[in-house]
Image (cartoon, rainbow, N blue to C red):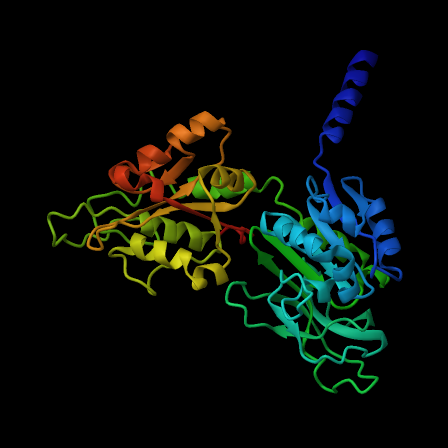
Length: 424
């Protein structure tokens, strides 16, 4: 009995040891002042699966973010933090988030994220409503819901944080407001009336990464400390998302629905019973399946009614490459290897091809996670899920795009961050 008990303890210990750890890099250098870093360190230090490391601007500029899940910038001065990073460090942060890392910015870190400053990182499509920023320090009220936390008429510490509005960058997606200010401070000749109803906490995507910023200080407000942990967990690279993502995709049963040779309802894949007028048409439904899949995952790609189902795959190719596609959060990937890596990291990845003959159909499919070595990946491409001439839960990119052998090297890959909506 004692041996069994000992084995159980060892097993439980092994499971605990294997629990994924979220690695957080906290900027601790020029411009990061006040209580932000000590408070964040205290909050994170009590959580077993979150580990923080303080980095200097020079560390980040030298590629020091490699291996971390997110980077955090706390209060102080956003422009000074930008100076502490230097141009090389700022580009390292942008590249880190663009490639799937997370960004959490509080007060000064929220200023730093904005696209409206020459020195800003530009990871958030936002700018301040006024250059006058010294609004004062004290408690203000906010309202909203952030990561399941209700913030109705909630007091929170404020200290000259940014009052933002959307910027007009076409290459960046819009941000989502999680909480808004309901009262304001307007000292030192700052404009009155602009703070109330403006965003206090927002989130967005940047490339393959996630961004969260807070103008006020949850880390320095009693009772709101859990928001910091929740922001970290949301912003960190997706862990364990693939299983649920692919569970939902496979439940669509593309091997049984969206079948060729019939007119189907694009959302369900079920035959409509309508007669096929063009006997020469193969009536394949790759683009309709992708449209349905993305809709169910809460991600937009060009679909009906914005475009009809005829030659939709070609139109989706053009849309993904356009400013509209970028604004919707789609990020172009270099090749099949990057597509495989993004799919493995929990992103929704599409392989898209436009037919050079505008009167004929292109093709589009969803890239599956996989562990192929470099040679096999180059030979057959990543595995995909598709509707088409042959519907498949799993086939290779080369086989799936077999009707487009001459254009195989022109396949484009795009990735999108997924935040799964509640299952219906």
